[in-house]
Image 1 (tube, rainbow, N blue to C red):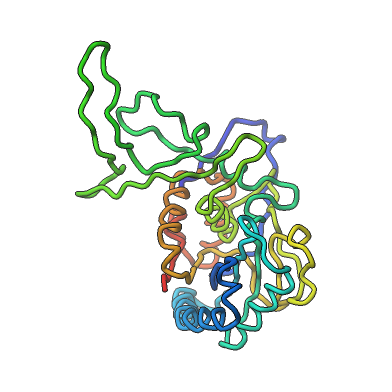
Image 2: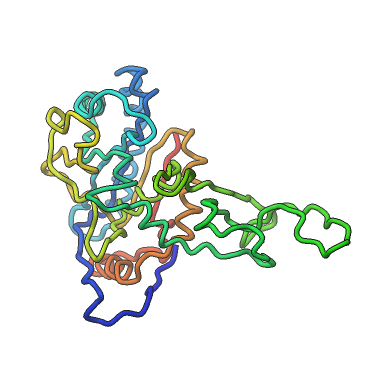
Length: 318
C-alpha cells in the first residue's frame, strides 16, 4: 500500500483530517462465525486458551519496542454478521466475554463484519474500493476488464494464451507470473465482490482488508473517521444486529481501538484469507494526509513505522 496526494483541489476545499486516538498495538483475539458459535462454549474457551500465550507474547514484544512509559494495547474481536446471522448480539457477545474471561483475557472492543461494509451511513467498502490502484502487468493489452469493472484483483500477470493476429496460429499458453517475483511465482487472483450494481456482495478478504485499515487508523471520509467505538456492555449491546454499532467498546478503561500496529491471532484456516488481505492492501492508496499524520505522530513517540502498511500487520496462525 502506498500513500498518494490524490486529486488537485483548492486548499479551502480540502477537508481537515481529524486525528483519532491511537494505541501502540491492536490485538485481534479472533473471528467468530456461525459454526464456531453453534459448537458451544467449550469451543470458544478452547480458542481463547490457544490464543492466550500469543497475546502475552505480542504484549511483551510491544513493551520492548516502546521506549519509556507503559505501552497502550487494546484487544478486539470480529463477529461475522455479514454472511450469516446467528443468535442476538447480546447472546453472542456475552458468550465471547465469558469464554475470554474464563481464560484470563479481556475483550476491549467487539465489532461486526457488516460494519466493514457500511457504517454510520458511509459505504466503507466502496470508499476503499475507490482507492484501489491496481496496475496492469507488463504486456497487458486491455483484453481483461480492469479491477474496478471485473471485481478481480491479482498480484501479477494472469495465465492465458494472449491475443494472436488474424489468421495466425494461437499463441502458446503462458503461465501466470507474480509481480516482483523471486525465483518462482506465488500467484494470487482474488474476487473482491460480485453481484449487480446496487446489490454488491463483498468478499471476506476485502472486508478483512477494510478491517485492518480501520484498526490502523487509516480510513477517513471527508476528513472524518468512520465507525467510532461506542460504549456498551455485553448485556445491553443490542437486541438486533442492524442496531448494533459497528464497533462497541466493552471495557471503559481500554486503550484506543485503533493503533500504530496490529496483531491478529487466528485459526490456520484464515491463512489464505490473510494472504489475500495483504495482496489487496498492497494495491490500496492511503490518503497522503492521513498517512503523514499517523507516521508523524508515531515519530513523535519515538517510533518508526514501516512505509508499507502491510508491514505494520503481524499474525499468529494457530
